[in-house]
Amino acid sequence: MVLYNCGQDAIIVTSWTDFNPGRRFYSCPTMNPNCGRFIGWVDPPMCSRAVQLFQGF
Picture 1: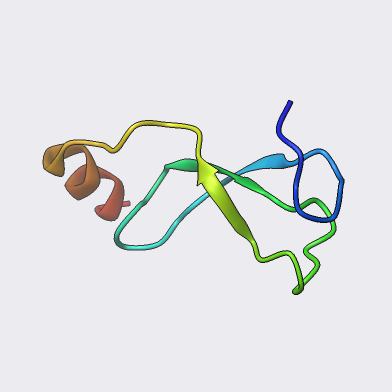
Picture 2: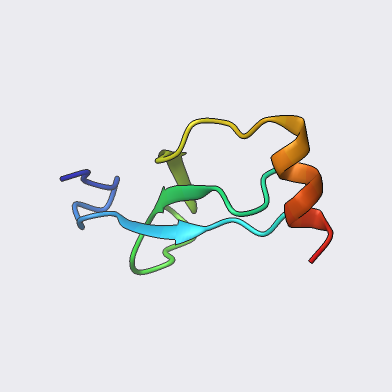
């Protein structure tokens, strides 16, 4: 269990940015701007080939 700054259990969401496509990260479930959205990665970084494949979709 990962707790967020607001005391809520963090949820896992997926990034679809160009730099981290398909990577999962912990986020605040309330999307409270005072908490911030990102707390840490769930997955290890992908190799450059995997990033290229995700960006091709």
